Image 1 (cartoon, one colour):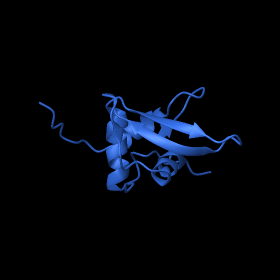
Image 2: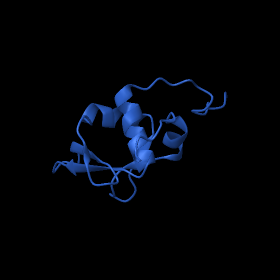
Image 3: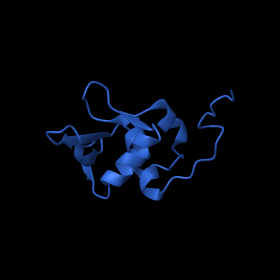
Image 4: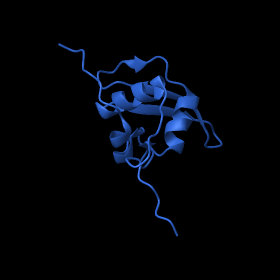
Length: 97
C-alpha cells in the first residue's frame, strides 16, 4: 500500500479567495456558521480577528476548504484553520502599520 502524500509533498493550487480566507484564518480569524434544522450548514461568515466580516466568503469556498481538510470545527465551535491549512497558506505581506 502506497503512503498517503502530505500536503507539503504535493503542489496544490488554490484560488485567490481560498488563499485570502486561509490567510485571515492563520492570523486568528474564524468561520461562523448557521445550521438548518436538518443539520446542514446553510450560511457561513468569515470573521477577521478585528471583528470585521470578509465579504466575498461564500458557501462553495467553505466546502472546498473543508473537503481539503484545511479548516475544522471542534465541538460545534467556529471553524478554524488546521495545521495542514497553515502549511498550505502562502506567505503574504502584512499591510498594517
